[in-house]
Image (cartoon, rainbow, N blue to C red; front, side, top):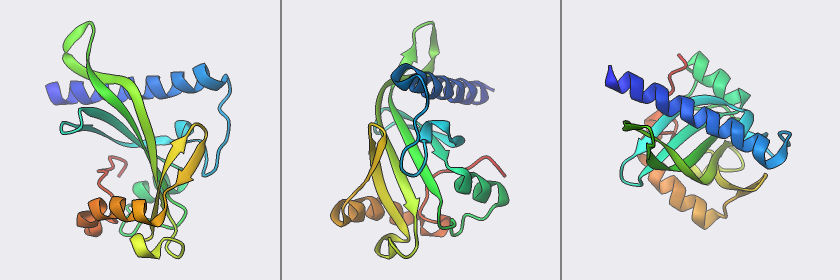
Length: 163
């Protein structure tokens, strides 16, 4: 039961922070290349103990549709998955809960089988403000090397709970 409570608090905290951050920064959600990740729906949540970080994994409409239909092996072209990362911290009023702390980055995987054929059909990028900057081939190769063990899962670590 504690795991379910923990996951619920984690997801709720991530969604509140994502939504609040959009309004605080812009007042209105501005659209960016590949869409506005802050408006996307949740695919999964992870807690990286090795990185002391909390992550919300969200997807564009193509990613959500593929996950719901169980068509992720391979993920379809047009899929964009964003990983929104925060440092982890203890909840100030609930010591047993770990919640997002300071925002650290928003990263992306963009599925385009032709354009990114050298990296399993995935391009890798990071948002700088409202612009998604795709990584060069050397940096993408480093990302892909980490994702290669997940070949049988479409090179994606996220365990979707949408099916």
